[in-house]
Image (tube, rainbow, N blue to C red):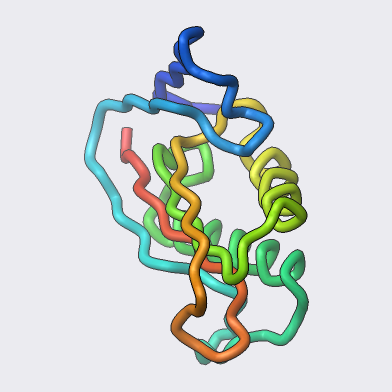
Length: 134
């Protein structure tokens, strides 16, 4: 059963952000839950080798695990922060596809930051989130 209590608004006076994998605003009642950066890690925190697309997929799997650990799901996410090493349009497309696969047309608000590096050598992607407990 879906219990998505978020209100997503993409004002007509702004561009359509959904092809890029986000919504302009998300409002939700309830308690905020902050989820720290998730990346392509194994259970010890070591980076799992792989290219950008593989790291994105695994990071989102880790985000899902973190959400489930507090009784939440993707539909509870109101905001994402995404961090991409050496960001380019090809990586944006991969990220957009990953977001649509997980959130469908109910995309959270998102800020993408292109960065020179992340916490561990070889990390290419990281995602954090703010979710709302209904």
